[in-house]
Length: 296
Length: 296
Image (cartoon, rainbow over all chains, first blue to last red; front, side, top):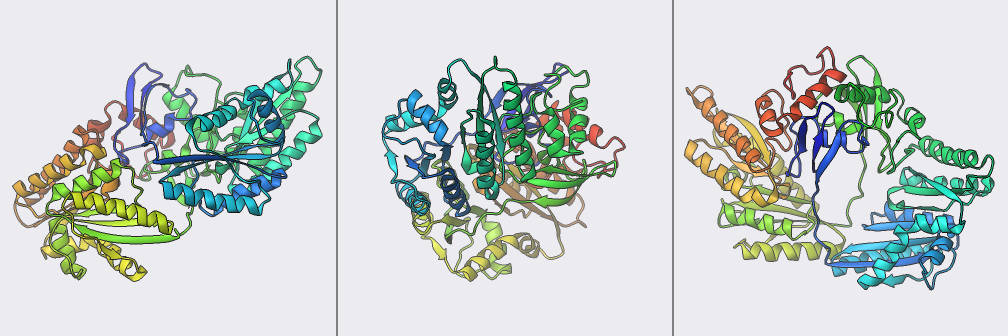
C-alpha cells in the first residue's frame, strides 16, 4: 500500500498511504514496485494484511498428460471458481519433487496442487466444482491435505522445486525463466514449450502459478559441456518470444534484470522510451542499480 | 490491464498487456491511470472482464444513528466478509433520495445499501453474517431486493444521489468532495465530519463507498449569499485535512485537479518532487492538461 524509498539524491520519501484507495497525484508506489531498484532503494513496505480464512483446504490431482492438466486450469479460471492457489508441476518436476521432497503416493505425471480458502461451505463448493472439472479432463481422485502439517509438507515440496530440479542432475547448473500469457493461450504456450524442451535434449522441468497464466522453466545444463549454455539460453529465449507473440509477457515475476533487456523492447516497443525518460528523471546520474531493467 | 496513450510528443504507445501479471519494466499503465491526462491522453483501455456472478442479492438496512451504521461496516470489513458493494447514505441523503427517487418504505435514517455476489450458498452465508452484525448495531431487518428490477431501482437511487441532494434546495449550487481513510478510522472521520456540517449551518449530505473507507460530501450553498462559497470551501478543506491527519487521503476517487493542488503536498510531502520530475520528463513543454494534479 505504501513504501519508504531512498531516492538517487539521497532523500527519504514516503509513497502511498493507509487508505484503500487514493487518487491524490501519481501512483509512485507502483512506479517503484517492480523497478528492481533502478529508481530508488525501497527500505520499508506497508502491506495490507488479510485475515486467515475460516477454512483452508489443499488437494492434489494428477493427470494423464500435460494438455489435460492445463486445460482443466483454463476451464476453472474461465468458470470464475475462486482458488487461492493452483500450481502445476509437469512430469519431470514431479519426478524431481517425489525424490527430493519424499512425496509419497504420487505418480510421475503432470500434477496440479490446489488450495481453497473461504468459509466451510465456500471451500466445499469450490473444491467440488474443481473436482468435477478435473474429472472431465481425466484427473485422478483428489488427494486431500486438510491438516496444516499435510499442507505444509505439500507446499514445502513446491517451494523446494528448484532444489529438487537441481538434484535431478548432480553437478549441473541451472537457470530459471518465467513467462505469463493470457489464460486462453496457456495450454498452447506450455505445450509448445514442452515440445521445445524435448527437442532440445535438455532437462527442463515446467512448473508454475498457472491460475495467473504464469509458468517457470528451470533449465539444467552442464557448464563444462561445449555449447550447453547456448542451448539453454536459446530455449529460454524461445519461451520469452512465444509468450510475447501470444499477447503475454517475457516475465511475470522474475523481472528484466540485464538478461532480458533486449526482450523489453520486443514486448513494449516505443513505450520503453517512456520508461527511459522516467529512469533519467528519477536517477539522472544512473547510480541506482545501473544497467538493469531499462536500456539507456 | 493496458492502455493506448498519445504522448506529449505525439507518439502513440501501448502499455501493459493481456497477461494477468508482468514484471517487464516499469508499470506505465499505473503511471497514466489517475494522472488526470497530465502525462498523456489515454485513447483506449484494455479491461479484464469478470463473469456475472451465479447469485446477486441486494439489501437495505437502516440504523438508529450514523455511528451505528459506520461501526457495522467497520466490523464487517474487519471480519473479512466479502461484499460487492456497501453504500452509506446519511439521514440527509436518505431524505433527499426518498423524495427525488421516490424510494418507498424507508425512514429518514442513516442507511446502508449492500450487494452480495457469489454462489447461492456464498450469498446466503455473506448476507446472514452481515445481518447479524447489523442487528448488533441496532439495524433494522434487511429489506431485500432480489429481483433485478428492484436492484436497479435501488442502485439508480444511489447513482442519482447528487441530483437528489441538489433538489433538496432548489436554486442552490453544490460541489462534491471525497476522502478515504483506513477502515479503523472511518467512524471517527465520518462522525467528526457530520459534526462539522452541523456546526457550519450548511446542508451537506454524506454518502459513500464505505467498504473502502471512502465517502463523499455534497456541499450545497447559495452562490448569491455573501460568504457562502467560502464556508462551503472551508467545510471541504476540513474534511481533507482530517482524512490526511488520520493516515488517509484527501481524495479517494475525484482526483486533485486544480482545487486540491495545495493538499497534495500536505498529503505526500517531498514525494511531490518526484511526481513533478515525472511530469517534466513525460511532458517537458507542459501541454498535457497544464496546471492540474501536480504543482510545477
